[in-house]
Length: 180
Image 1 (cartoon, helix red, strand yellow):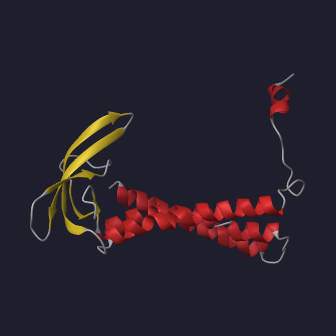
Image 2 (cartoon, helix red, strand yellow):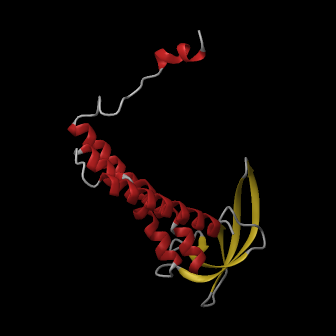
């Protein structure tokens, strides 16, 4: 008896085309998939608005201290100096910062944290929507498959692959911008 025989009772295999969810179940799954892909776009809007200067106060963020919380996590605090003058404000800084870092930033309307602005801020803010784009990349193919439409599946796979690669590139660029 080998290991695969021992695990057989615990595994179930689904053969494509055999047992699919019903129309209602498939509808629910597709709505969840769509929501999972669209939600990153919705949640990133405030970060884009902040990075482009539509909201918040422009200024300079100087990271004052970073305290290790253990397990590779840090809590950083910084001093935000508004461009228009006024008193400096102590704010939460990005946990990937280091003490002494100085960067252009926007103070959130709540006044509790400052995020990078300009190109770095926009690239950082695009990371999550790029991930959502990757989630949505193969949804057209799945819709064609579920509705049993054969025409256009190959195009949907090619387009989905291209969009997935683009999404991966955008995520990497955004992560590099966020952590540099």
